[in-house]
Amino acid sequence: MYAQIYVQHHPDRLLSLFLCSPGSGTGRQWKDAMLEVARYTKNRSSLVEWLNLNIYSALGLLGSDRAYQKFYCLVLTNFNRGFREDQPEHFRFHCIKAKVINQTTKNILTAPVLPVLTDPGFRITIVYGNSDIFGESNKYIIQRHPSAAVLYIPESGHLSWSHNLRVFEPILQTHFNL
Image (cartoon, rainbow, N blue to C red; front, top):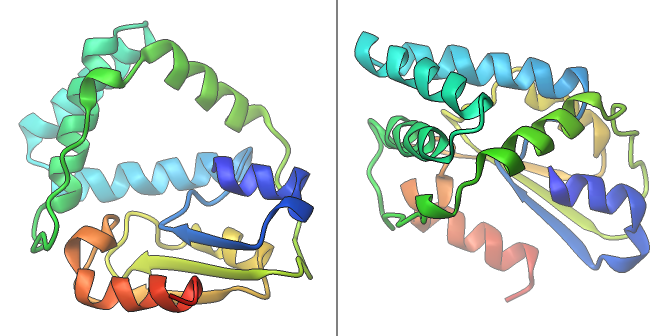
């Protein structure tokens, strides 16, 4: 989301934009995407995991860093479930802070919907896993960036670079002319 907001304010400072499984948008678009992610997560979780996710989320909203750390640890476990990890990730959950998450979420929800970027003057590539957490809501970002190349990586979810590095890496190299 940060990159998408930044490009709206400073398109002259970018040479290209590579968005990997990006959030779908601000305002109501963010709300739609988060409801979609919740449905995706619920379908991939056991009852105990789903209950824990909701408890951790509620405690995080009340300001608990530890609850959000547990929430994101469980979320990422869920996002990787059923996929081969070519490059396992080692996230630093201790850096997750409730105050920052809560303020950022509030700001994204109350922000106006981002406008269409019709002719940015630079290359835009949008990549999703074919089983990404974002499904229907990705239409918002695709409509907002009509000049973008949109690619779906097979056999991968939200962490497509980790799930299918063999396909992800050439896309990244092509985008950056490496």
